[in-house]
Length: 222
Image (cartoon, rainbow, N blue to C red):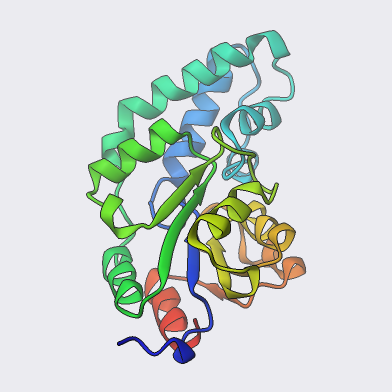
C-alpha cells in the first residue's frame, strides 16, 4: 500500500505544450504563419512564444494586435491549418513516460490543464497512447482559459483533492498564475515557452531545466 504520508501532493496537474509535449517551436511557427496569412505583421518569436498557454482565440489576438476582430475566425482557421499539417511531427520530451509512470506508482493522481482545445488534446493523447496515464483533463474551450482558475478548480473538485494537496506544473507564467489564482503550489519548467527569469515573481517551488530534473524533484519533494 502506498504511504500517503510520504506524498506532499495528491494531485499533480501538468500543462501540455512545452511541458510534456515538445511543441513550442512548431506553435510559434504556426502562429507566425497564420498572422501573415491574414495580412498581419509577423510577430517575433518571443511575442509568439509568450502567448502559448492561453486559449487559442486570446493567444492569436494578442500575437496579432494589428489584425481586425472580423478576421479572428480566419486567423484561427489558418493556425489550425498549419498546425494540423505538422502535428504528427510532435513528440514527447524524453523521459516524460517514465516520469508519469513513477508518479502513478507513488499513488499521485495526474491531470492535464491546457490551453489546447478538447479535440486537439484528445488527438494528441490518442497519438501517443497517453490517455490511460491521466485521471482527468481540462481544456480552454470547455471551461475558462488560463490564468483563470476555473480549469484547475474543476480538476480538484473532480479528483476530490483540496488546493493544498495540488501541484500545477507548466512552462509559462500563465500556468503559474493559474496555480496562484486557484490557491495551489506551482513548479515551472524552463525548457518550454517562457524564460526562467519570468517565473521569479510568481514564486514557484522549483524551476526544472529538464524532464530528468523535474522527475528527480517530484520524486524527492512531491
